[in-house]
Length: 214
Ligand code: DX5
Ligand code: ZN
Image 1 (tube, rainbow, N blue to C red):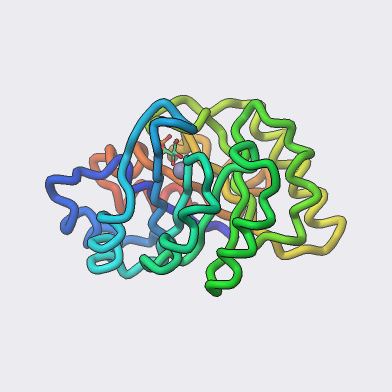
Image 2: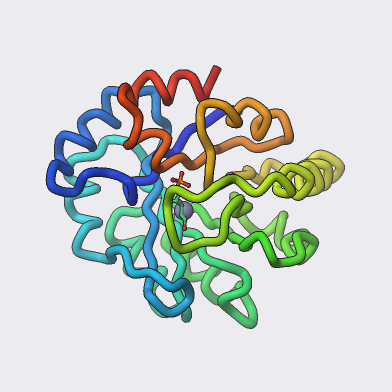
């Protein structure tokens, strides 16, 4: 599977409706939504109020990436706001199961995420309990960072485990993805690539999306 989820974090919010119409016309599969709280990450993005225009103007599934502390307090509200999938960071919680169960109870797809400095094997026990894992290829917090090359081996390790156990868990990769490295990240075993600046900052965003899927 080769899916592309443009991150709306890099969109021009002064022209949000046009940006989302471009996404609707494009070959993009999902819209990736980066929620930052200034506590789990040293940056603040946006929260519930923007879910409304995202849902209103975007026809693609809304893939919510929570970079927040205490995700169990807020996951249900993101589900109710129209999320198609909701993910949060494993390192933000003691036990991910309560928040995962709340998302599941809403009938929404679950995702567990880890930053680049978290031992990737910590995801392994959850591979059969989530719909997707999100492997960060930059440190969560900002768009426009450089892809960390060591991510490739982390993707391969998770892919091998998913294959070995015959699971259908998707692997999403987020951060520093562009038209030059997308093919190698898919090759390592990713199903879904998030791309912010490489889509919204491109001269021709629709073409950039097509090139990443090639
Ligand atoms: C980083 C976010 C990413 C980011 C990706 O904290 O999770 O989704 O927006 O942006 P690029 O593609 O520019 O690295
Ligand atoms: Zn993200």
